[in-house]
Length: 274
Ligand SMILES: C[S@@+](CC[C@H](N)C(=O)[O-])C[C@H]1O[C@@H](n2cnc3c(N)ncnc32)[C@H](O)[C@@H]1O
Image (tube, rainbow, N blue to C red; front, side, top):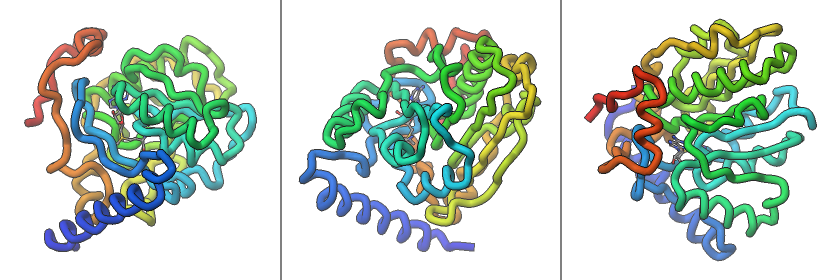
């Protein structure tokens, strides 16, 4: 069991590592992936930006059956690091959605600097109301939002998949850090393909694979559930999930929030955590 001091020391060293990486490897090239972004949060339930490392992404994608017919979407792509790392795999399409305009701008600039703008799309969108999930079959989520929003997003994903109605296509949910396992399980459409701890950061990795022939009917009406509590466990292991001290709460409702909160009746209350 790691002591509190250990956790703080590890976290401090990680911030130093990120700062050095940004100063030495990114800033001179006009890139910006590593620095955390905690300010200017405009949307309810947003936990702020942090990067999933290349090694962690490769660990997740390695061994999965990826080909030209597959499309990858990072839900809450931040500055686009996962898109960059994921684009090395043979996906036919790689895209991310991001709700914070300043992060969208940084992600697009990063892709231009890397000359990946033709390979990678950065879409400015709220994950709760995004209507094009049906175009993708690999969904990556790194600890992007609180439990309620997580449920609303999964419900939206499932209803887009139901609208597409392709029961033969395999869909993968790649959940890194906190996730909403109960909603995924209750959908009846997924089986847990891998359940492990990231060897690099200690975060939970849950990879869900859709069951053959799922028609998404029950899934698209997924009931609510709380987060699985990985946050506390991962932090205890010195993980890079967004820590309690850095979890960001919006000060005010941002554009689109009222739509987000009223889309479904039971989403209309604000998150209770303080
Ligand atoms: C922890 S960061 C992960 C960034 C990136 N996926 C990675 O792993 O490196 C979560 C991102 O989700 C974004 N986000 C939060 N709520 C969102 C929403 N409702 N719609 C779209 N993006 C959202 C945040 O702004 C943040 O950039």
